[in-house]
Length: 182
Image (cartoon, helix red, strand yellow):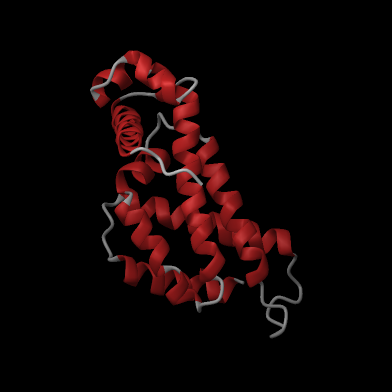
């Protein structure tokens, strides 16, 4: 795999940061390419060297976060809930601007929340406890919808309220609740 030029990576990061910052100020649909370029301190044409349009820029930004969380899924499912969720809450904290904008802002595309929910529900599929008998009368789709919606909801609450508890505390409490549910 070819190594990405540092200047290209720096420009792409500036563009991603610019679009998220602008989304904290106004609806995504109202943001122009020129505003993104101005905020990132690049020429308009530079954006088109890297992205088709502002939608492509946002899609790739979302995709990069989804991929990073997916990589965590690969090893987190081997851990107990309380331990597995710590890196996720640390990731949400580290990427606060992105997640607060995408989950807590009225101008963000609602498709992100749906995509996040679907990703979590997919990850929870292998976590359903069928051996203990506690879920005997429950269907997978109801349990997954319940747990996924609760998880996204608690992340939204945590972010909207300024992350009132550290990631480790959130992971412990949410892990306990998810363990009871699945």
